[in-house]
Length: 253
Image 1: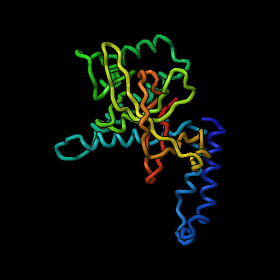
Image 2 (image 1 turned 120 degrees about the horizontal axis):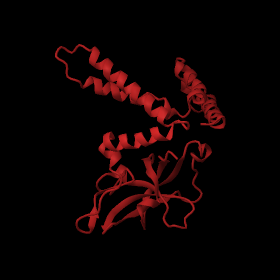
Image 3 (image 1 turned 180 degrees about the vertical axis):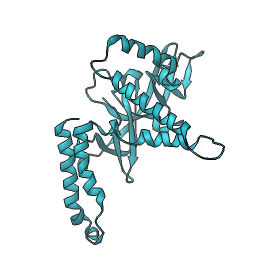
Image 4 (image 1 turned 180 degrees about the horizontal axis):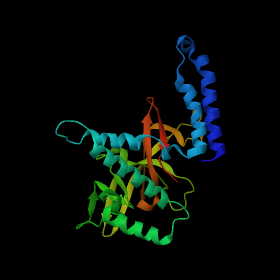
C-alpha cells in the first residue's frame, strides 16, 4: 500500500459520490446514510494498516462460524470459546512476527519445520505426484495451488497465463484438459475472446488499482498447451451482459 494508491481510492470514491445524484436522480429523495462517510475513512485505515486484506474482518467471521458449530451441553458459551479466541489471536500475532524483516533466521527455519508438520494438507500438498498411468486429470496441484478442468470446477479452471515463453503479457482462459505424461503435466487452455475492437472497457480508468478488464463473454476456438509454471494466477469472471464479461486478476503479487 502506498500513499498514491490510498489517495487514488479516495478520489475514485469522491467521483462516485459526486456523480451519484446526477446518474441516479432518485437518490436525492433517499435518507442520508453513514456508509458513504465511513467509506472515506478507509483512506485513513489504508495508510495506518496497509492493504485491506491485512485487517478485514473475514478471519474473525470465520472463527465465529467455528464457534457456532461447537457442541455444548447447555448451549452456554464461556471458557472454551475464550480459549479458542485467544489461541487464534496468538497464532495471528506469531505469523505476523515471523513475516517481519528482522525475524532471526533460526526462527524462520523452525517455522519451516512447523509448517511441514502442522500446516493443513492443502497447504502442504505442493505439487501432485505423477499418475500411475499416463492420462488425463480432473484436478492438479502445482506449488500449493489447485487447478481443475472446466468440466469439473469452472472457478478453478479460470486462469491468467502466458501462452508462450516469449509472451510479454498474460491472457485469460479456461483449462480444458490436464494431461500427464510421466512426470510432466501440461494444461490445454481455451482462450477467452477479447473485447471487439472499438468497444469501451469501463474498467480501464481504474487500472492498475483495480486489476479488472472487460472481455467478450464468448470463448475462442484457439487453445494453448502450456506448462503449469506459465500460469500467473487464477482469475474471477463475471458475465454482466450477453456479450461482455469482466475478468479480475486474483494474483497477490
